[in-house]
Length: 133
Image (tube, rainbow, N blue to C red; front, side, top):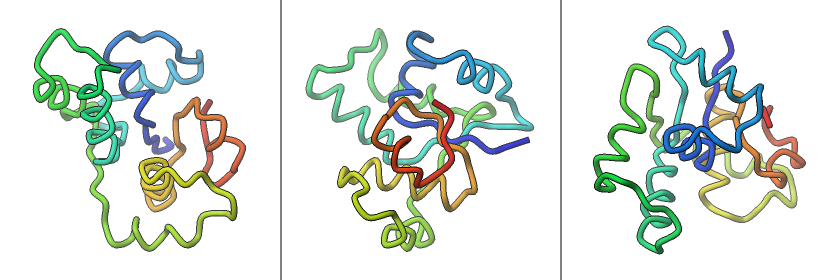
């Protein structure tokens, strides 16, 4: 079975509402389990915390509790920003979006050999990594 890394917005939609996900994305998410966890980059936790701080995301539980639940095993495996991930930055295609979080997420997917589950058009169109829109 393939490995899948969740883009930040997909993690939030999956855990919080389940809405705005494609049927293909929902299928993959429904198959997650101890044998086939979904991967999430550390940087997604930072992005979520920033969006929460700015009032763009609100949760019914404290932020730290939400973050811990959203990335808890066995469904999710958290991925660190390793030297291998950082070393992948120069290999991104010319013109790839400059957003540091997007770069970390895509480089993490490339390092893992994972398909990125995303709705981000710029990432999809870059073809820097296999995606599941």
